[in-house]
Amino acid sequence: MTRSPVTTPPPGADQPSAHLDPPPPGSALGAHYSRCFGCGTDHPTGLHLAAVTPDGATVEAEFTVGEAHQGAPMLAHGGVLAAAMDEVIGMSIWLFQRPYVTARLETDYVLPVPVGTTLHLRAWCNGIAGRKAYLEAEGRIGAPDGPVAVRAAALFVQVGMEHFARHGDAAAIAAEHHEFEVNP
Image (cartoon, rainbow, N blue to C red; front, side, top):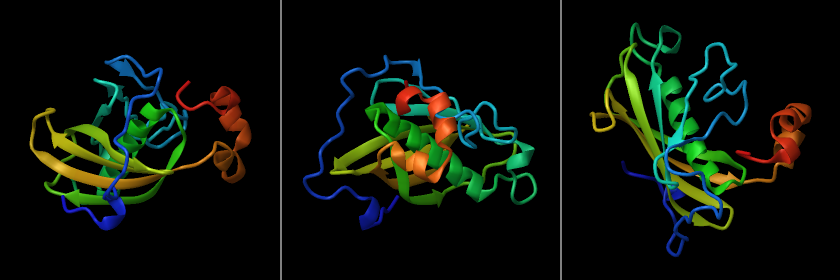
């Protein structure tokens, strides 16, 4: 994937380091909000991504393309694939246990993804510079070592939890994230 300068870590960017209290390898990360289109268990047509961290530095998830996710007949909609990439990347930044938002997402579609296909997603952080995190992800067809169908590079920006309260629903945030914790 050829990344733009916006999603490429600048010279001198810090290499990501694990949080002082990282989730143990193999841990499920859980949904960050129950009605989230990407990971929420209560979203009726969402992707329902369930992520795990195999090593405290990367995130893996699976997504099976359903009929509700098609664009062309019996093929995944590109926007849905981009949403899956955004979600798995967003889950990987949770490993730092600080709130971030997507500032830019670049997606390369390598292979068509038929309805019924299970995509094996993996995401990781390439560097951090100030409030900016530079991340990548890939989605492979059928198995973790299957052919790459989609790749993404992203720039995420760290924000305070008040960002979500100011622009979203503060009561819902407080109800699901006691004291605004991310990934409690």
